[in-house]
Length: 133
Image (cartoon, rainbow, N blue to C red):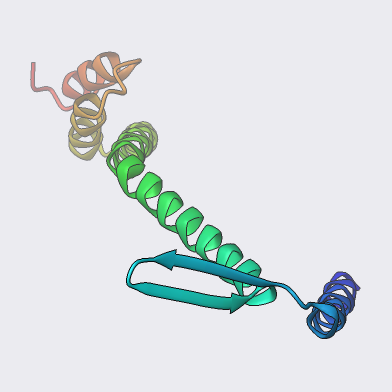
């Protein structure tokens, strides 16, 4: 339904442009010696609109390109945090399954990733259960 309204608006805009093009009798004249450029007012308006849209797109592209390092930094930090959280969950699961060596390995990985809450306690219990004090 939304697409239908957009198509209707586009058709109405096209009809308005055609009607404006028939009525338009104005010209834009640019003089820079020794050159002289004369164009219809409708072409001048369209050229100005296209130039504005291109400039806007170029500035948005530049803005996104300059903000890309910060976006990548946030993405990597979030991915590291998610991996550390998954390693902590895997360490707890391995501990409750009785696989203490794997639990200790996963706990060490979670600790390196910044998930320190409960990791030292978990690693100590694993080492104690595995009789490796």
